[in-house]
Length: 304
Image (cartoon, rainbow, N blue to C red; front, side, top):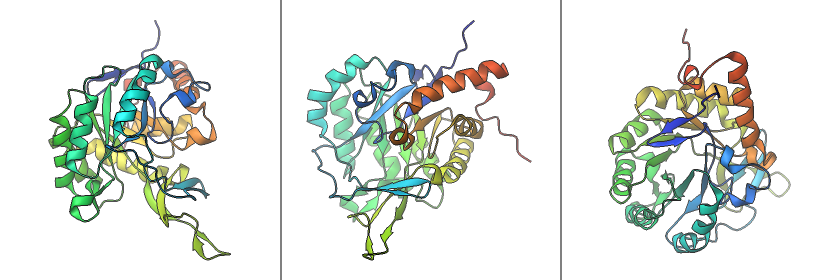
């Protein structure tokens, strides 16, 4: 009997727990030459806003010790072009697709959710609440439990699709944020978005990034991400998807043991575009060799 790697992510059954993170996997088709997308648990496409965004000026990416900083500026084609040009392509991929949604206001999130709802090839939405709320003086939705809950409620009211909320790590209590969005109707939670960092060119004494600060990702943030996944998994009763510095099979296993039902591969896609597919194979081989089921791993941490 074949090993069953499937897992339920807030109402969507994916064929295994290996997904790819938004902003690191394009719109999916870019990685098709390197990995069989159907073999993955799912892909999460680049964040989509109401209007197209050109993003920030270069330099926008810089490598750091055990990671990278990015300040892309949420560059994307906008929801209308996404519907017209990208959805027909996504329909042909044959894999589970989540669309990452971003906005400058609660109304933006609600409107995008409403426009994307009619398309069955889009299986779910991932809500990026680490965006500045223009109407609230630049405060990120993801740092205020009340605002995070209001965004979640607005999206849920405008879609029939399962909603995954992506949490920011730049908060005092990630567990409180998780409880807030769960209470507002989130079907699953992805943890974490990037940490905030910067780099300086010592010769010019200027910031390397034109935006000065950026999001830190990669292996450097894994211990922080793992701790936050553990805290969120204890705090909520909906599936948690772990993100942050996952590069190897051991990394995958750690996140599952900490309580994640699935994981997303992010920065590693830039290093090895075939990484996600390789980790699916690695996880299957491990479970077969150890004679384990996936459920034997998830949340199985043994505390002192």
